[in-house]
Image 1 (spheres, rainbow, N blue to C red):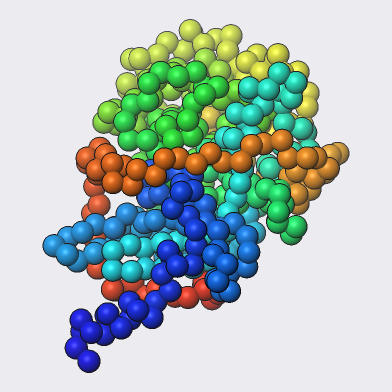
Image 2 (cartoon, rainbow, N blue to C red; image 1 turned 30 degrees about the vertical axis):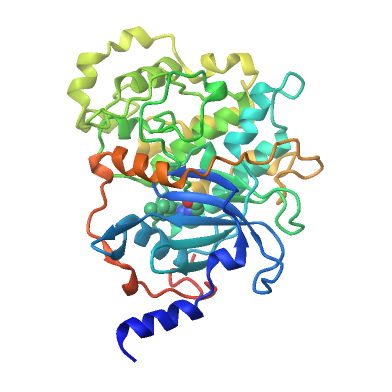
Length: 409
Ligand SMILES: Cc1ccc(-n2nc(C(C)(C)C)cc2NC(=O)NCCO)cc1
């Protein structure tokens, strides 16, 4: 049998995602890495239990009729096939045909961005409960601890990437699943108040100060700073380092407005607190752009005083996350041993334990696949242009992803 007939034969045998699931009308996200749909197994589909799934369409590139998988798609598949933890998104299956690659995940109805948006808009239910916050934080640290123990950094932790399983799943109701939705909008967002801010806008609000000062090394401490920002936001429902400007054209990670917001909230870093500050690549620029005296009266305690967090275990732990010097910032392992997680209410495996879930289901986006693709590819900034690409046929595509990860937690 020659190549073309063999491929045609293979194509006929392969289960087509369109035959197995209803999903086309249920798009829940679109961005840098592709489009995500809620998917429901078709009645004749006995392969998959009757529940919701998330189907992610990976952006392939048509290169003279050879479908090639982008570097980022290969990185995602290679990474997710190795990882297995109850607080990380789980890749169930990979589908492919001549033109597309689909990743199948369990579906998560909620995320922390959606939870915060609900409370910001509510007149009668302005804050998430202490039990919900504690469970979300505990589960987040369990997931991040697994990643960091395997020397994997997330690098883009933010509320929209912390997913939570909703009703319907007995075993996993209220279970945190850390993902990387990649829903980054690729153009400047119109100026919006944070109440309505989309989860798809690229934001610097969760970026650690060393990143903004152009540190050459991503570290685990960068993820810890981001979780600290999420913790503060869960306690106040306000983004701690909210900054109206979302500038994408900045050529360097140095972001003056974001640094000003951090210093206004926390005070200006002292050399005695952050020994290595002078060695930061943008230190000279920092000393030119900022006068430390302008931030003398600023501190985290002063900023959060209206939320009555003084002398609480929450505040003491928050200060350990939001330590300016990355070498002094608490680790995920240390955080899990903090007294905060050993006092009432104790963290429950179900973040929604003892409550009816008030959060609305995800909204479906219009599925203008063609426009989005044109728009998406036209607006992709140069740094995200796909580097080397790998022909689709070279990717061994497993069935159900069952093998244990080589990297042991
Ligand atoms: C290019 C790329 C995109 C996403 C990921 N990624 N990484 C993770 C962690 C949380 C395990 C680190 C999860 C994912 N991917 C996803 O969460 N995919 C589901 C919807 O996009 C990796 C690589």
